[in-house]
Amino acid sequence: MTSIIPARTAPPRVRPGSSGTGLARTVAAPLAPRARLLPSLAAVYRAQLSRARVARIPLLFVATFQSVGIMVLMRGVVDGGSEARAVVAGSSVLVVAFVALNLLAQYFGQLRAGGGLDHYATLPVPPAAVVLGAAAAYASFTVPGTVFTAITGSVLFQLPMTHLWVLVAVVPLSGAALAGLGAALGLLAPRPELATLLGQLGMSAALLLGVLPADRLPEPVGWARDLLPSTYGVEALARSFDARPDWGLIAFFLAICAAVGVLSLAVATWAYRRAAVR
Image 1 (cartoon, rainbow, N blue to C red):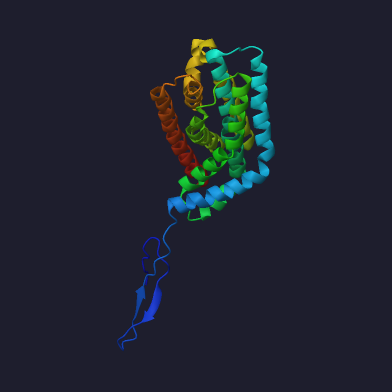
Image 2: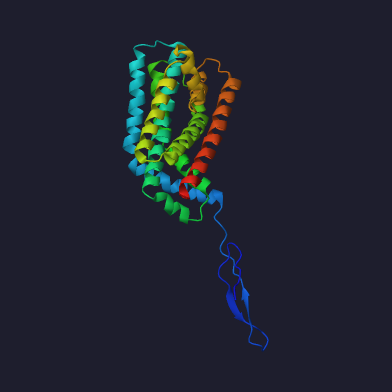
C-alpha cells in the first residue's frame, strides 16, 4: 500500500488505532520551518567577516597603499579644482572595488570550483542570504581603507573634509553594487582562473574610469564609465568636496548607486542558484 507524503513533512508515524480492529493510522509530523532571511543573513555575515578579518588584512593594506600611491602620483599632474576632487573620490572608491569586486569574484570562483557551494546548498539557508551576507562582509571590510584614503587625499590636495560623512552612504552603496557584480562574475565564470581574470579587469576599469576626471575621457570611454557601478558613488563623493555641495544631485547619484546595487545583487543571487543546482 502506497502512501503519499506532503512536501516538507517527515515520514509518517504509525499510531495504533483506538478500535479493536488492529488497524493503524498515519500522522504526518511537520519538519522545522525553513530559516528566515534576516537571521540567515546575519549568520553568514558574521562568518564571512571573521574569515575576512584573518585572511584579507594584508590585501586590504595593499588596496589602501595602491590608492594612496595613485593619489601621490596624480599630485604631480593635478593641482586642484574638479580634477583633484575626482582623483580623491575615485581613489577612495577604488579600495572598495579592489576588495568587494576583485576579491569577491575570486572567492566565489574558488567556492564553485572547490565544491563549496554544495555545502551551502545542503543548509536551510535562502540563496539570497549567502550572496548578501558575503557581499556585506566584504563591503564592510573596506571601510577603514576607504576612510584613510579619503582623509589622506583631502590633505594632499587641500580639500575640505567637512562633508566626508558622505562616506557613510557611499561605502555601503558602492560596496553593494561592486560586490554583487563581483559575486556574479565569480559564479558565472566556468573556471576559477577566468573568475580571477574578470575580477582583475573589473578593478582595472574602476581604476581607469573612476580616478581619471570625466571631462578628460573620450566620449566612447565616457559611456563605458556610465555603465560602471562605482561611477555614481565616485560622483557623489567628489561633489561633497565642493564649498556648497548640491545635495539634490548627490542624493540622485546615491539613488542610482542603490538601484544598481539592488540589480547586481539580484543577478548574483540568480547566478548562485544557477551554480548551486549544477
